[in-house]
Length: 141
Image 1 (cartoon, one colour):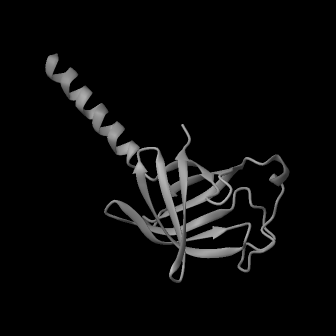
Image 2 (cartoon, rainbow, N blue to C red):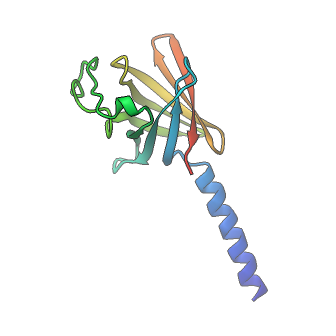
């Protein structure tokens, strides 16, 4: 009996630690320039084993029907809500990189990488050549 309880406790702790270190889940985005909470992005693993993310909630009531008017790719004119904005991220040690991220407000696509700063804080960095911006996203429980 004691052995099975110990095994259950250890497996629960391992499962918690693994979940806490995962990119998968829903994250509240915060604009790095205005510090305003903007949306919820659901990060998920694709069938190809890479990671992607889509906007599942817009926090500004005036933006609920917003479209990506400044986009220059296939997303031009598409609703921002439920739009896939992160694609192609691959796990690389403690980071996810090699993907792309779209800023729907500016219509720009950036190369990106992400890493967990803490269990519930995700650093999101978008690159355009040698220039970059970093945002902190917060896990939604």
